View 1 (spheres, one colour):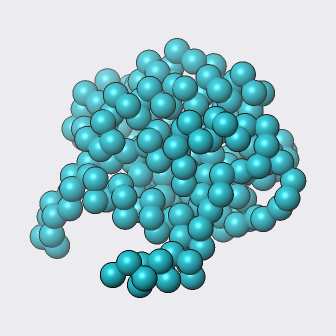
View 2 (view 1 turned 45 degrees about the vertical axis):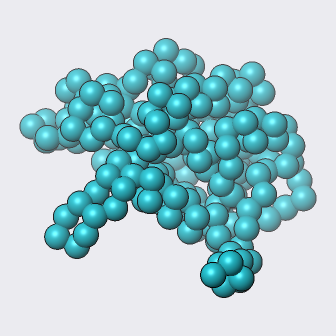
Length: 210
């Protein structure tokens, strides 16, 4: 992750805010989706006011696919995003927003060094995109209350949406991203990026609080 004393040259990325997560087969449950949606809208509005570019990502799946099939109701952007302006949109087919898209080239062209990540799901497309960005040398910020996920249960085990959300963001904050609230991020616009932890500090804190 890039480190610098210079003010962040940010772009806000809004990933997969599509109806599949609200009226479709993948209902987001934590944080409360109405809260995360409201914060996504606030983040877009604040970015627009500050002159920070807004990038929208939409996931495309082939016709007939159970989820995110292009043209289906679940594929449509939620009105919180569809009703607001953005600078550029990319369509993806895999969890990473950089894979098979022009996102990296666009960020380089606009001299962006800090990517602020919002959208869905915390542990899938947000996680993958954040890791990709960090590997490319970008600073990464994730707005913890402007993303979300759902419960999982399969042959391996079961975890709640809250557990998935918290564990994913805790790990990312320890090494690859700075995680903070929408309010905290808005307060930093035009200045320094959100503060991050590191692997050593996170591990030592865990040991000390056992």
